[in-house]
Amino acid sequence: MARDNKTGNLPGDAFQLAVYAVALNKTYDTEVVEGDFWMGKTGKPTFGYDLTEWSEERLTDSFGEMDDGVRMEYFDPDPEPGKCRFCSVQSACKYAA
Image (cartoon, rainbow, N blue to C red; front, side, top):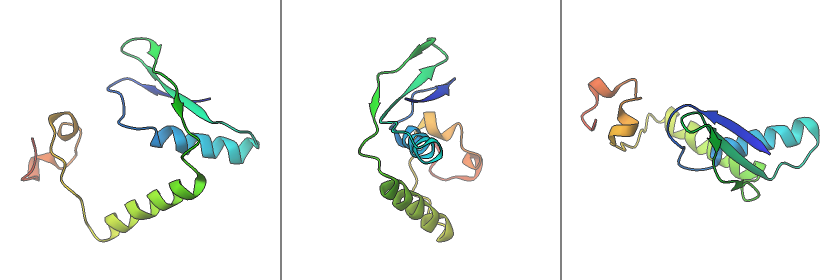
């Protein structure tokens, strides 16, 4: 099982856990197919996330898309107070919530 410790809010999806699972699978020749987040605020893990739909190819494609966006300097605004407060450029962003 892949696990990530969180001190703040629950992430939106299992992407991060899937990256860990692929890394563990490749490094240790194992088959990690589930993961969860251990939430520091509650001291408990979340429900288990099925990571089987996150293949290495899917993750590689996702990282490629993110890299393409950065290279093109395309940053789709997604104003939301919970996200904006962690953004390093919020003070200069016309979309900041």
